[in-house]
Length: 632
Image 1: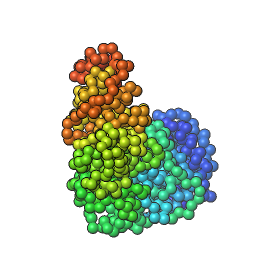
Image 2: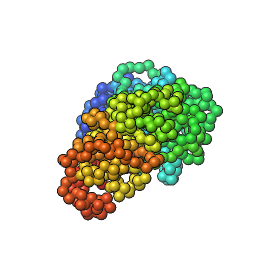
Image 3: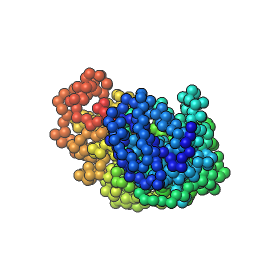
Image 4: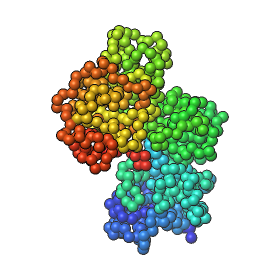
C-alpha cells in the first residue's frame, strides 16, 4: 500500500563496505533537511561484511526514523536494487543511494523539489542527483549544453544517486515483469558498450525501458552526489567518476522536456531533433549525431551521420575547439574534426572504435595538461612536389592536435609549393642555403622544429591514418621510451617472425652493417626525443641511429604507422657516417642464436632473448583496448 508522503524517504543500499557506508551516512546527516521527519532505510544484502551491520545499527540519525533491513540471504546487486526500489510503494517517493556515494549538503532540497515538479510530467521516468562528467559509452569527457535552467535530460538511468515517485517505479516494475523473460534476447539492440555489462545490472534493464517507452531521466547541471568507485562486488573504478558538488543553496529552475534543447540519448549524444533546432542549416538532413564515434553503423541509422569518424566527402565540417563539442556545430566553427557525411561512406578502420571517438578533443585536453607528445615532422624537399604531396597531406590529415610539418628547402620557396599549405597553421618552412644536400636539409628542419619528439618523411613516404594518435598514446603511457621504430608497411602485424625481424639491439646493428641497418630502420619509421638529436644534430640517419644505439636499443611498436611507395636506397652520402664505436657489442653468443630468434625456434629464441639487449615490443590489445609491453 503506497503511503502518501510529502517528503521522500532515503534508501541506502549496502553490502560489504563498512567504511564507505559510514562516509555516506555522515554526509547524509550533515545535509540540510526540512522541518519534518525524513526516514532513513538502510538495506544490507545478505552474507556481506558483519561490520556493515554494526555501522548501520550504531549510526545516529537525527532527522527521523531509522530502519536497518538486513536481508536474510544474498540477493545480488540487481535484485537488491529492485527490492529497494519497491520501497517507493511504501514511502510514496524515495531517494536511493549506494554506499560508495557522497552527497551535497543541498541534495535533499533538489531531490524533493525535482520529484514534485516532474511527478506528473509525461516522458520522465526518474531523477538523477549525479551529473556526468565522463561518458560511460567511451570514458571521454562529457558536458551537456546549458540554456539557463538547472536540469537537462538523457535516455540513460542514473545509478549514482537517483529518485523515483511510487508511480514512476511502479511503471518500470510492471514493464519489467512482462519483459524479463525475454530480456536477454531483446537487449542485443542496446549500444555496444552496454553489452559487456553484467547480468546483475538493473541499469541495463532500465536503459532498455527508457528507450522502448521513449522516456528520460532528469539530470542536474551541477551534481548533488559524487561516486568514489570504492572496490566492491560489481565496481572498482576509484576516482573515475568523482565530480564537483553543489556547496551552497540554490533556487531551482527546472527545464521542460518538450522545449529543452539539452536532451541526450543513451549514447551520450544530443538528439538530432534538438541539434536541428540549434542549427537550422541541418534541418534538411535525415541524420544521427555520432560525435563520440560509438554508434553501431547499421542500416537502421539515418542516411547522414554527424561524426568524428573518417570517411567520405563531408557536406559540412566543423572544428573541435569548443566544449561541449556540439557548440562547434551550433556556432559553425570551421574545421575538419566533426563531419557530416553519408552513413554508407563512413570508413571502418582496424583501430578500435574508441580511437575515433572525439580523439582530437581528448588529445587536446591532454596536451593542455602538458601530458602528450608534441611532434615535429620534417620533410626534406627534393625539388619535386610529387615526391612529397602524399606525405605532407598525410600529416595534415592527422587529427592529433599537436603536430607541425617543417618543410626544409634549399634556396627559396619552390614555385609549385601549394598556396593552401602556406596558409596552413601547422606548416613551417626552413629556408636553407642554396645547394644544401639532403642531410643538411634534415638537420636544418630538425633545428627549426619545436616538438619534443621528432621524425622525418623522405620522398615517397607518408604516415598512416591515425598514426600520431597511436604514437601519442604509446609515448604518454610509456614515458621511458627514448626512441622507437614501427613495423614496415609490408609486415604482417601479428606475425611473430615479422616482429622478430624488425627487433634490433646494438650488437645486431653492428653485425648487420650500415646498408642493412638503414634498410631495416628507414627514417619514416623512427621517432626520437629531441634531446637525443641535440647531442649530435646530424641529418644523416646512420649517424643518428648509431648515436642512439649507444644509449639504448629502440622500442619496437608492433603496428604499421607509415608507408613507402619506393624502395629505400642507402646512398653514399648516408653511408659516409662514422662506424660503430668498439663498445657497441652484443653479449657473447647473441650473434649465434639470433637466427633461431628471427625464425621463431621456440626454445633457442628464449636463449637469444636472454643473451641480447633488446628493448620491449609495444603491442596493442584490441579486446582490452590498451597498449602493453612484451618481450617477444
